[in-house]
Length: 191
Image (cartoon, rainbow, N blue to C red):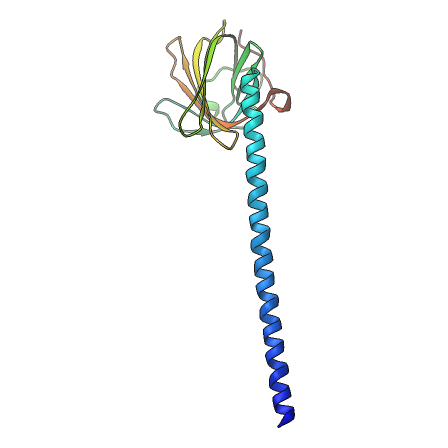
């Protein structure tokens, strides 16, 4: 009888121990997920601050992973080849789509590269925290009004390029990085 009671007691202790270990493992996995989530939020916040600082200093690149023309279908692009950049007063727009039948002129990379000079710009902050950066660019190859939207807490951004020459507006989506941190490949400008 004593052996049975002792055996039951030992079994109970082992079950409680195994249960406690499982609870600890689950807790540890949950803690790891929480830590990873906090780290990602911190990294996004730092990326947002760097993008915002780049816009303020006129030294940034929107590396686009998607473009579309008004009323057109969105096309996936390579962020190191399709971008909108500002370096001081110099603005560059390069589009290299993965579709060869799109009528885009060749810049040596299978797309189009145009440049211009910053004429005027302004910034505003929306109620939801989105930074709106608007500017006008003029040059032999690029005359347009541009609106860039940098979303809160991240470096995700959209740009809307409204050409002054009557061409269809272009929308771009991607991330904004400081100019010096960008790894874009620049083709030969059209002009």
